[in-house]
Image 1 (cartoon, rainbow, N blue to C red):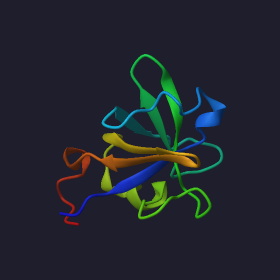
Image 2: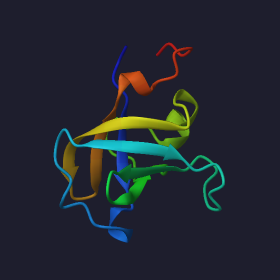
Image 3: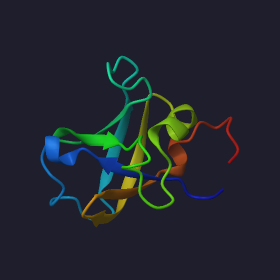
Length: 106
């Protein structure tokens, strides 16, 4: 199974991104009632709460990342990911394989 990458965006609206470090665990939480994006997935950190969102626009998805819309149906209500790189335009992460719904074969 290949890795699934995603970009955290919108960090400037919360705590910034300077504190993100490689291997840091993040929690993804679906927001089906989000008024702006029905496939919104917020990103949380223990002790801080919401720190951003999984990018869902061609302008914010970096490299080989999947958009929130592409991973939305591949995960349950929550999932785990790990920070790989902190870049000027976003935080590149890898989705934990154990977070994938078992019925899916990628």
